[in-house]
Length: 510
Ligand code: UN1
Image 1 (spheres, rainbow, N blue to C red):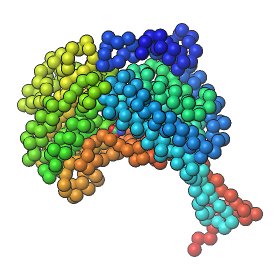
Image 2: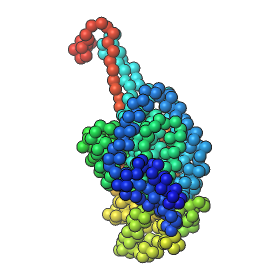
Image 3: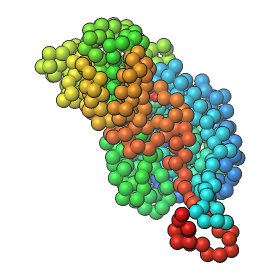
Image 4: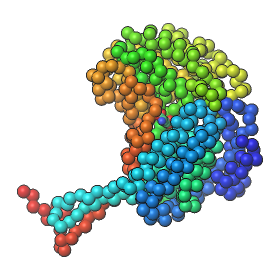
């Protein structure tokens, strides 16, 4: 996109240009020399104003019957389906996600709309028996008001849709702050959302840097403009969001990082496990929150697994994301810096532990990590580090890059303990043919999402998505479970006895 087009985009999405806010230059990570997309960043006050605008529009919106709001969700799904290829290409061209994965991501929006359009006719409350005669109890779901959605750029359209679609369906307004480096994807999705029939001001897209976002959230929460914050991103930022919301007596919906383990048991189909490890370890360059962190392989099959895995990783095509590749460039320079730090660490430690880095890389020199010329784009080699140990940084920290560790275990208990050790709890997988092991793993592993003979990535839109521990505060996105995030229960009792019946006191206890 040219600077001229970018200027138009910036002023359209960030509101009036006061000249006071800074500008972010979003670079296509696959071609660093291409002209950047320039995005004007909002101030904290503008963020608050966007929330206030959503709050004003929300009152009318909430009065629309839920099935009618469901029709708007259906429109969103139809529009996205009609523009699937264009939106997928925008995502690829914006963040370097391989086109096949970008299409999958856009499909995830369509699936989300599919699910929630029906929910408009089902936003059930309950009728509940009373302990007294001639009295009836009810429950209702009320919208929370305005949902502030703050999202990462690795899933720049699907993950935002997990919040925005059900939030709107439930009768809320939305202020959405996407990652600046994924501005083009956010803008394209925003345009489709608005075209689907949302009233003016109900959904506001605001680009802002981290500090202005925090300050803007603080203002909006303080003034009672925001009823829920939904955040997908790093554990570190999630912690700050949690602290901020706590000060305002709110609990956010948090979806944070992961250090997702894959256990490969003695009975596992090793080829299937290798395929799963390649997809979840290196697909999207390991930049999904569900990406594989460590393979925990039984010592009896370790050598066979590592040999096949290293061969598969070495053969994996990396490069131009418009082609059939396992992954393209990293998302943005800050993630490349992080990859290089880990590469340094691997270079300094792997010999100390007597282990070896396999795949395409054995050197400590960060430049050795590049595929092609570093000036071209943020293309990096995949790295498999065999022999990671429980006290290694690489074992405990989310790398958010194309680096996978391998370690061994002897008993299932040990494998479970190793999987839980980093303290995250998003996704975990086991490859086994033994049902006893499946259920032992299920009860022992602390993750919100488990896979059996399948990779750690690839959640479906109608299952609860989310994690525990460092991966989140137990809140769940997707499916019917998310309704509890974007509505608040209200109860009502209706006494038609014509007299004052007192709960607990006017009841005969046999
Ligand atoms: C994320 O990385 O924040 O299950 C979401 C998956 C994808 C969603 C990942 N459907 O890997």
